[in-house]
Image (tube, rainbow, N blue to C red; front, side, top):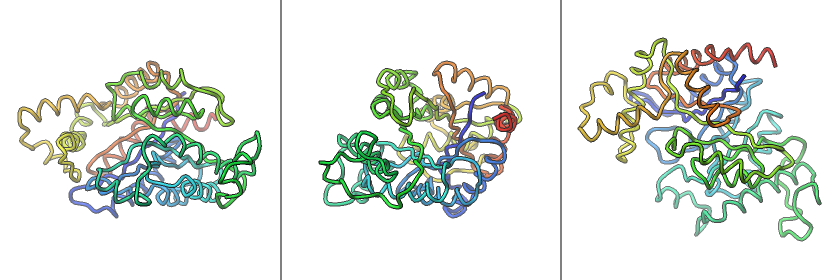
Length: 349
């Protein structure tokens, strides 16, 4: 039995709008809860033509209202943009609204270009990437303090300059903290803070099992986690047949080829993506892109994902599926849920 979750970047169709993309995110979450998915994460991107999700904390509130059981959270909050106190308060509020269902996934990446990063910075100077561990430590301390912890149990030591500053609303409950990453640094930070680690295989599959091994080697138990816990973020496309899946994937693959050339736009219809006149250089890129995703029939995809679970020693999978047509995306997640018998797993638990 393996738990499956969803990573949704709220992709925008070429012939659609950002508002439609956000509405489709909420619709997909409702369906995925019904089909037995364990958690649903939304991403953070800024100044993007391709993705509508710029404020995961707001989307999490909407998703919490639209669902009843499934965990909802961020995949992730890009901490260098923000004050740890502000992030702590946002997720304290979410935890108060939807107790026991909130995930706070965080990362170091900016989620945008350099100019937009500068526009997002909270003051005359952005947080340096080197202070990321201190941001994470402060975030944890604010969350612990909000639970009323102090002294050796958690929160701030007596001499800390932030002692007496509380992330509101205070009360019981603690969002599940996750570290996201695509390389060794994020893995090491996850281990240092005793967090579960979600490895973005869909970004950096060339890293192999290295980041996960770094995470396990650096892991130190925390009050919230006693042993390493790993999820894999995997790009997946499922169709009734392998041919159907590969056809639907043409839109996403075309977008990735353009992304690699700094030309990312909205997601093209399948027919247009298939008809695109790739140059020889782009054809080589396309061939490599096609290898980055697990694509095929339900049986093929299930077998490949279970092989990856074994290779990485993963406890969960977080599935990223991008299509031009919303119905194709719904179908892919439904076929995958059926292939893994998620409803039966949920009933057994």
